[in-house]
Amino acid sequence: MMRRRHRNEPAPSVDVVADIDPIAVLGVVVHPMSAERLITTVEAVTNSGRVGFVANHNLHSAYNIRRSPGMAAFYDMADVVHVDGMGVIAAARASGHDVGRKHRNTYIDFIWPLLQRASDSHWRVYLLGASADSVQDAIKSINYELPTLEIEGHHGYFDDRSNSDDSIDVIKELHAFSPDLVLVGMGMPRQETWLAEHAEILPAACYMNAGACFDYISGHAYTPPRWLGRLGFEWVARLVREPKRLWRRYLLYPWALAPHFAKDVLRARFGRRQLGARRPSG
Image 1: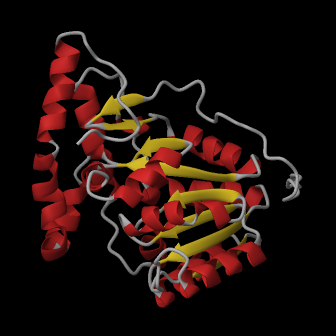
Image 2 (image 1 turned 60 degrees about the vertical axis):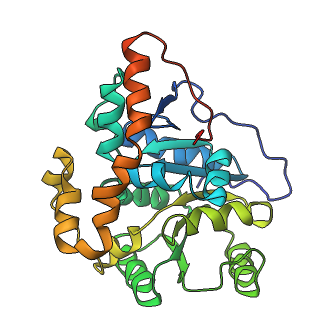
């Protein structure tokens, strides 16, 4: 069994993506990597014995980060930001970056290999978010596939204001459980804001913003065919299923990013590509 660092030991300083060149696209910064590299990166953050954050970007997050200071703060703190969205991959390719489908990692595809690594490494996993039924059904599904994995969870329907009684109670539960990996699936920008606002009092672990991951695991949400995901068109299936909820995300928000896309393409065309700041400029 891998030795877990005692909570009172000093946390080592680790740059988990020192060998990966970050790229600026659509006004945000991402670290392109394969699914296996993402899992080993999560492992490195987990084993560092400190509070660490593994984030992701898609068109939805690139749009919302400009409108949520709490979400921007979370990305400022992130150790690594992987790509979760073919829209980001397409924009990066159009601006001259050498990336492809293998650099896009969505929870639907990598969550089970990640949980398998967690089980093999004897991590303790905590799920925070979704409805009470969904998170408990997700835990049951995970326990069925990985019966030796230590896993607990809490629903996301609580008062998430900074240092509210509910938030403090959840953090007390986290400290009592002493997790290695915490997946937070409360939707954007709520999950990112909550993590940023409570970062200083969270127990040492790797934290990941997980969106609707628990609903997919539990079967409470529709999972598009993976062949559509490989082609980059799973958003079409989701839009057809839930047009009222998703039409803005898929049909309106990308247009708001058009000026940033144009800047990226022009910068690449005229040879002035440069790395942007971690926080978007507008």
